[in-house]
Image (cartoon, rainbow, N blue to C red; front, top):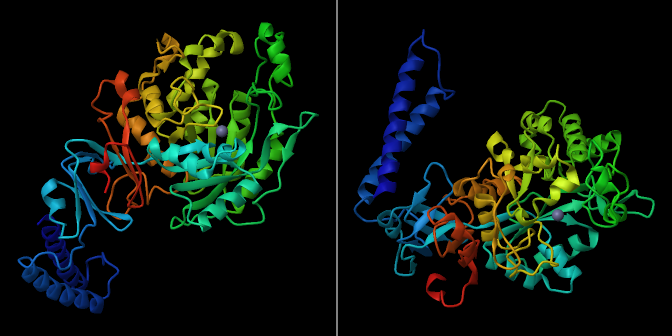
Length: 515
Ligand SMILES: [Zn+2]
């Protein structure tokens, strides 16, 4: 048995190291390499010696010391998203966690008479998706749906964790009650809203009554609901009362003259909600209180303002410990790309680009700038943390394969890999040459949709990959997204979704895959 062999090997190695350090301690010229005192070392050595005996005698009696699995999925393609062990055949679950990942032989050895065995028959099993920016739960309430209905849709598309990227007080209250009542069936990270996404009648931002600064962040991964950060709207979103994305140079003159523009935008450079000084202070204060900040920033002026504010707050410290993050990243001026890298800023990326409307950007941003709309696809190649935003709201029909803010995980994966869009009539819109570069492989896209989105909420140690000890948050797919023709990724289906060892979605007719 591999596990036992590993234990024995480790013990032998440890014993060798222990006796070696004893020798070194006895030698006056040698540097003491270990911090262990001689007493400790000899104690360990005797302990290990007895352990070795026990383990050796147990080898024949099977598994008294090894946990037994509740559920085993075997005979499949297990995409772990863990670089050290990328693909395996089987996975064992115990309680709410992953017990082991490995070959059919090794994992099937972890069964007893009670273990439920699921033959995957070659199907693909991978970590559940993590949506790093959605409004699926908030908007269900706005549109008169229930939290349960909204969770059903997320689970059906394989999301085991969602980040609600705007949570005002009443919504947080609602989420807390749902958690308390045991009604959260997936993991929810909520970013407490700092200001509203719409402006007042004078074009000023509206600061909301807030969870922060009266409360500490909730970072406990034992809970279904966490509040790891605050959300700040920094510029418009091209809808009435929100204003337009803030640009450093005016929008195209012809475009500014249109009724559409006059109806949406506060100025010919869009709408920036804060001065640099204001936002610097807000970010520094939130950071000091233990919050990360997520910024809605679409235009290059808003992005630059945010980068400055992050630089001010970090004051030379690494962003690794705070994880401030920019949402949307729609129009990145080329000189700003290296600042993302220098500051190690996290960035969200919409998987499904509205390729059918690509020519609209030429009118909107002008011939000098429209190509900057593709700069967001350079971000994953820069070595920074890029995660998925679906930005779903319920004005989109979940079965619509055209909408960019799609709730369907496979549509975003398809978009990331092909940069194509399915038009309303079902035809495919192909990207123009300016939109094609910086292709994202299926492997990289899947990382964006799992472990990187987990990193954005500091849960990379508990979800996002399939590794022993992590939560059993996983899905079974109808095909392997890494192997299939990229044009068919959009047709892949989620057959089963499990959160914390419990099946929360089972496709009709696939009950054999659902323990
Ligand atoms: Zn959003």
